[in-house]
Image 1 (cartoon, rainbow, N blue to C red):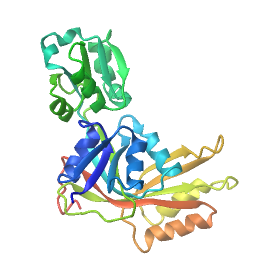
Image 2 (cartoon, helix red, strand yellow; image 1 turned 180 degrees about the horizontal axis):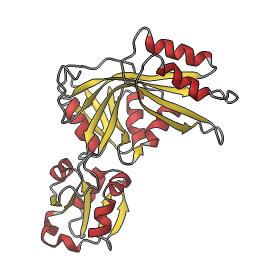
Image 3 (cartoon, helix red, strand yellow; image 1 turned 180 degrees about the vertical axis):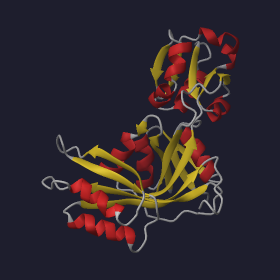
Image 4 (spheres, rainbow, N blue to C red; image 1 turned 45 degrees about the horizontal axis):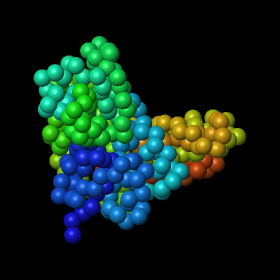
Length: 293
């Protein structure tokens, strides 16, 4: 029986690219939304699921974070970083008159990533948001009679038989998206993959409401142990204004001394700590040398 991996679909999304690279032999099952993708793991429909977590330009994908924190307690078992290249694509029947398009469809993040291009090159075109770049390409494929275009990746153009009429319409070349791999249990994924770049541990820290300087002391617990933090982000607890939790990425695998020591010190301050995962990360397109690892 082949491994079943869910992802934010339909086919042709950047999430599908991430799945193709890390689970090439798997049965890939698309879902319409991020919550549906996550629920599929909890319901046993798939063994793993892959969903977007953060984009370098647009920031965190809040629905992924909030659903993992407030709805489904699934561990993060891996991360895939995918370079983002956005292209303008049309149905082949509109290839020769693509400059007359009246509508451009894509995910809101993709539209934002191409703001300068759309503003300067297609200022009079109507923008319509859909649930994913793959869904935009699917719509263009299914409506050849409409003079519309989609913004998406090369896989989407291939999957839906579209013509790329303008390549690399994104505003920034150094754009990447982080995708997380979720599983019911904290399993260990392979570190032999050519794109394996290292390990990180993600924690959720909730501060006591009446403790002045608590965040400073939390960060100090990592600092004096020389634990490198690659990210710290606050998110609302959804219990009232001014109530937040913090997501912290530590650039190392969970060990027996340093991270547990930091957690114990933070909990001694009256904070609550939840380990969201300790996992390998893979960066598509970058083969790390053994020295870098």
